[in-house]
Image 1: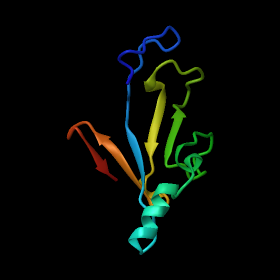
Image 2: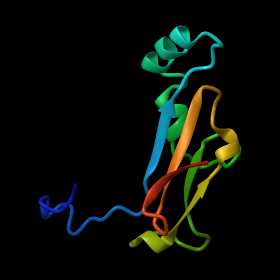
Image 3: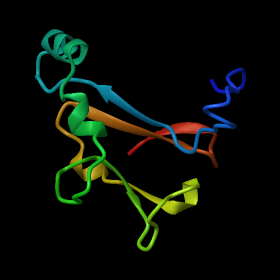
Image 4: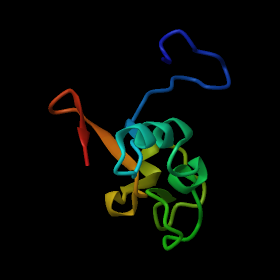
Length: 105
């Protein structure tokens, strides 16, 4: 994705993690579940928002490490995945570099 995009504003970018949210639905009827999945089972802001508080229910928390005032590199952040917070009707798949595969959490 970034191989051919080396603009001055981006420098050299690389992917550090891949998180896939798959909407699968919650209904017992298969057709209704398909319709739910197409429309989505949770709003994007519930899954992806980055905020200051840890208790706001985000699935993925990205925070500056303690003592870092002006982050300059990826290592200045902590990334925490809270699989237990994934809403009903949504699956979270994470890239596993060891298996070179997406793994359902």
